[in-house]
Amino acid sequence: MIRSFSLSSFLDVIRQPYLYRILFNTLRQAVLSVLLSLFVAGVCLFVVCRADFKFKEFFMSVTYLPFVIPSIIIVLAFVLLFGKNSPLNINILYSLKAVVIAHAFYNFPVIMHPIYEAYMCMNRAKEDVSYTLGAKPVRVFFTITLRELRNTLLSSLLLVFMYCFSSFAIVLTLGGGIKNTTLETEIYKNFKTTLNQTLGTAYALVSFLIMLLMTALYFALNAKGKTEKTAKRRILKKGGIMSSVFALVFGIVILAPVIRIVLFSFFPSGGRGRMNVFKAYGNVFSHYNVIINSMVVAFISASICVFLSFVISEYFVRRNKNLSAAVVFLPLSVSGIALSEGWRAVSGNGYFFSVITLSCVHAFLSFPLIYRYIDSGVRKIPLSVRNVSLTLGCDETYSVFKCDASILKSTLVKGFALALALSLGEVSSVLIVSRSSFTTLSGAIYSYISGYDYASGASAAVVLIVLSLLLTHIAGRKAK
Image (cartoon, rainbow, N blue to C red; front, top):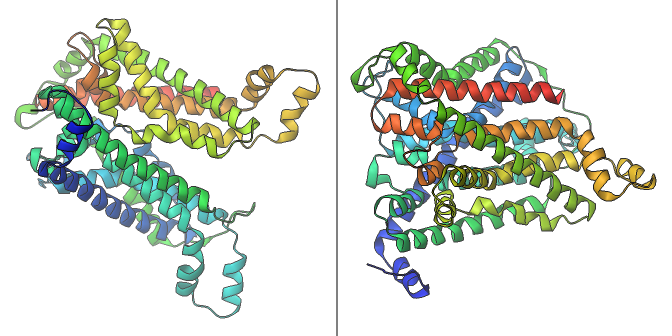
């Protein structure tokens, strides 16, 4: 056993065959997940990019749902949908297949929506010239359209790969144990179960180096070139009934996990998960402090994340420093488990320290996504508008927090709502930091699933879903 972490101990770890076994598992599930996500997104894009049709708005709205559904809820939904006592009578749990399908459900919108937006705003001049010269639609797609969308496609695929590579809750719960263990679950096991801090640190460093390389490739793709856009959106022809049927059916499929959890919470049945509905909800609400913990941590985390995103974005835009902004995406490279363990090690044991630790970790993990959203809004403010307040004698601080913040009120509030949802659903850091006297809704759901108390787990999941939707709705109304 390695007693202390050092360069020599790290070199000893990377020589072990077991490391390459779990690295192979991690890469395999990530690659398969990306391919299935691409297939699902491709089918959806084939339909929505060809025509406008009935239920298209419903379909596009529903496909945003996986963005805000916490991974632990997806886990519970898969247990209820594909377990031994599921109504579908399909048992795929605790296997690589379950992990890949769950990842595809969770990540296909990451590919679908950016490509759809890029396609709708893409400059069509080259396509029109090709059609005029007699080129067939298939040839135009592969020689022009796909080439124009190449950077958006590759960066989306790489982003999905990074999410799947560092996935934790889905792999831990649906993966079936050691046969499908990954780097992230091994990091968790060494920090939380075997208490081998040195081995956990070594695995975390390996994960960090690989993810750092992926992050560098992601920026290289985004910096290499952008799709040439036009201000006028593409006008699509009117679609037929088959497109409408597909949109309606696929939308219901996406809603199926949430529907299954809600129904099961009121009509629990089967196996060790059987429990009276009133007892299940009573069990959840009797621990009201768990709900309060979730809301407090989410509010502080979202406040930190939105404030830093706004200030840093303003700094880069006003100083005209585009490349320097790449630094803010470094959290994508850091293992959430290792980060949580580091914060836990330096924090105290009381309620205050638990709240602050989880809030900071959640803000750090959510920062790249929130920053990207807020930064897009900051960069849309015309330079002339920025200069008006400065011309009138206002200092830069007033211009940022009074003028720009007022203009971006809607963007900031929506970013705050998204950060709330991300914090409420974060589970990996909760499992590391939480103690017997402190946990959150996501941590409680994991505990219920581990104890086969699916009725209480479904009830807690419904509370979490309602809480997320309610906060998002309130934020949306404030943004108007």
